[in-house]
Amino acid sequence: MVYTYLYNAFKCATMQFLRDHFEKLITLTDKEFQYILQFFRSRRIMKKQFLLQEGDPVTQEYFVVKGCLKSYVLDSEDRSHIMQFALPDWWISDYQALVTQSPSSMFLEAVVPTQVLCITREDKERLCAEMHKMEHFFRIKNAYGYIGLQRRILSMLTGSAKERYEQLLQQYPDLFQVVPKQDLAAFLGVSRETLSRLYSKNK
Amino acid sequence: MVYTYLYNAFKCATMQFLRDHFEKLITLTDKEFQYILQFFRSRRIMKKQFLLQEGDPVTQEYFVVKGCLKSYVLDSEDRSHIMQFALPDWWISDYQALVTQSPSSMFLEAVVPTQVLCITREDKERLCAEMHKMEHFFRIKNAYGYIGLQRRILSMLTGSAKERYEQLLQQYPDLFQVVPKQDLAAFLGVSRETLSRLYSKNK
Image (tube, rainbow over all chains, first blue to last red; front, side, top):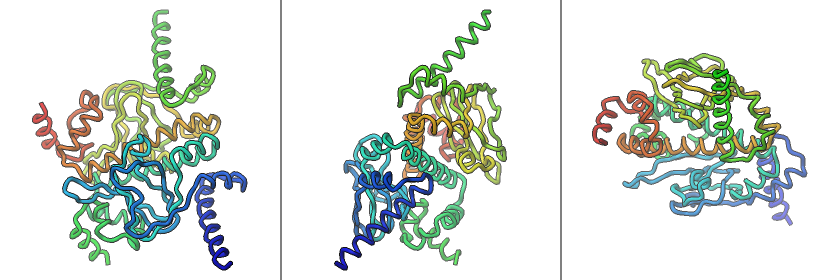
């Protein structure tokens, strides 16, 4: 009984988190949100567990409710290069593989214990086709994502390691609480030693 | 009379080019396309003319019909860093400024004589709100754009200058016909000397 109560409270909080996320850009009736919910499936994964590994078929997109995920590629010398982190309220997948329906070129791994809501590509497309406001939501989300990547490219082209580090710290201070230094270095494209130097200067 | 005929033929070709572009992802009736067309305005600019300069208000997005545009920032030492090229069939603007309604942080300049179709932010939003299929079109376009930027980031993180050059050559061979070497170097984030070395090796 207590378990059921806790389970329902947990489920409720998760659902509300998703609803709040949508309602930053669109408004939904209870009925509409109930309809949308059926397309999502909750999943919990442990630290260092994979949602995707290189070569896997990619069928889903993930919305982070708790924890943190990272997507990365391994180069020919097994060095990891981080494409994206995803904290709560962020979406993540191997988008190239998802859209082109090709095998994953990335790893998608939990940095800490993580809960996600998953939606398949087909269900997302169906939801967008059936509900104009969901199509609008994802168009605007994509536009913000595009801008974020443009900013990252500019900081890679123009900024020194120090500037890139400070920009990341300013934009996403939460990342520094969750993500190990070596992952931040792999995201910024600097060595771990360089990052440590920047860290100590910043204290 | 001949002039009117030529003008109409030119206008027709431009309109058909835009329609073909939309119809790669959606289908449109003649009536729908006529409705969409009223939101676009044609503009021709000379080589080295600007559509945007740093500090300008950004109100429009541009669809390239002929020619080539480049968007770039200048760093504190007046070096240019190229964010994007846009060949025919591509969209370009300073998206961060457009979405956040802040002044442009970029320059948008014609690499060669160029014709664009312009649409304002308000008109695009109106079009998307009124026509679900246009909202769909731009969501999918954004998704492709996002993937393109992710690919570029990965090539910046993992690739040598040589690999980045070869990847660009393979993906966008047309760019090499139109864009001067110094612009390609500013896009790849390498010196002009490095690019010249890569060029000569590739012949």
